[in-house]
Image (spheres, rainbow, N blue to C red):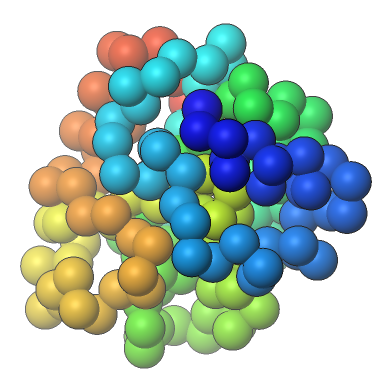
Length: 158
């Protein structure tokens, strides 16, 4: 992992995820651009397919806790499709709070990747321009989860 990522994650452990996240906006971790060229001991992909407020809070909180526990030794992806796609929308079609989107952005600053399902986006008439900047479009969300599992990622669904 690059040195700035280690510093960001060290700050995370010292100050907590949501207090320090906005300070690191300009730099993105390596896994926001690639499919994990580096290897961590722990790899986890979360399924996010609901726009329910509590459901989203649980996923975002869990990601933060996993980062606090494992620091540089975990790679996290949130695979977003179905109604969950609204978490990543600049103008969500569901009641997604600004706070939840800011928390997702902060997690992204710490290296959590958010993969948006291209099929879901097509069904809504969305393009990359409709998504928050940190979102990465994948052609098919479920296929993305399968491929990640084949690469050793554990799969978590609420």
